[in-house]
Image (cartoon, rainbow, N blue to C red; front, side, top):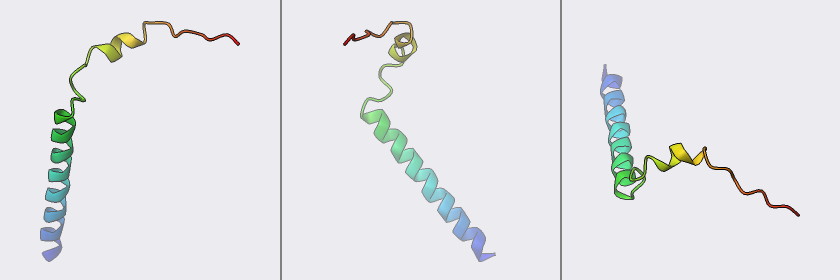
Length: 50
């Protein structure tokens, strides 16, 4: 029965770590521009000739 408390504690720790990573990504601006990656595939890349 004691292992249940260990597993609950580990899962709560993992959940808090993922929540902290999400807030860090949000604060650093990774979710600011959501439109450009969708349009990037429509533009041709420049081909450099040697």
